[in-house]
Image 1 (cartoon, rainbow, N blue to C red):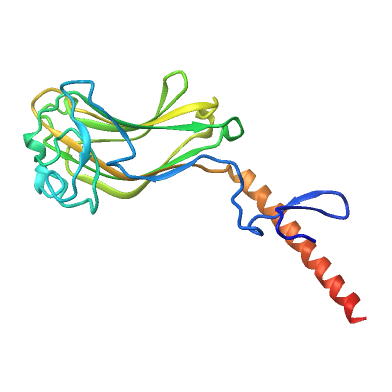
Image 2: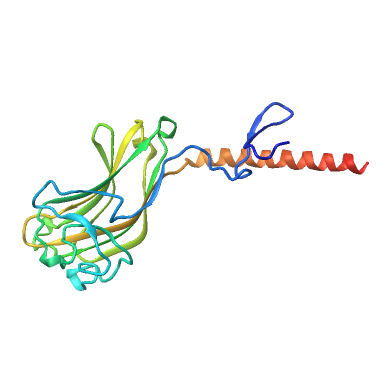
Length: 240
């Protein structure tokens, strides 16, 4: 029996899938990343009132403290929305929607699988006096036809940050093959406050439904059992 293949036929004629025998990852599922926030995203600066671009780990706002920066949260360059690299958050002039995005493709075979988005982020700034006008940010996935689904959101009432934030988009949203878009957006409302968002180490991947994982595990177990049985029988024959 050739163990370099991922498929073999049992005596009953059933085809059993053995994962991991050849070290080849199954050719399905969406996987992109980890993506560098500073270099792997497109920054939309079409709005003159917005600010979006790479942020340097060695300068403000990463090195600024309090409401003026990210308190040295990032250990490498990152994506920056709402502030200029080298300036503290309070010195920024953006007052509209700042956007960074990355496109990715979904094939027909990968439809209806949940999409898991993992990222690091830091968000800080001066909140508005009017809580109905607080600056906020969102992480969204846009599917063909410009239909969006929110993945995560936060507002600038105080400093917030996370390493390896994990959010999952329901599989039912991913129902059309084509080009999707992952988007980080910062909305700064009015001029009474100023905020900024930093992001990095972004990964997008589809995850199998629990039922399909159990099915694959069952097939793998059956396949392993069959091979073990064949080896035992072959060894007994040799010993005779």
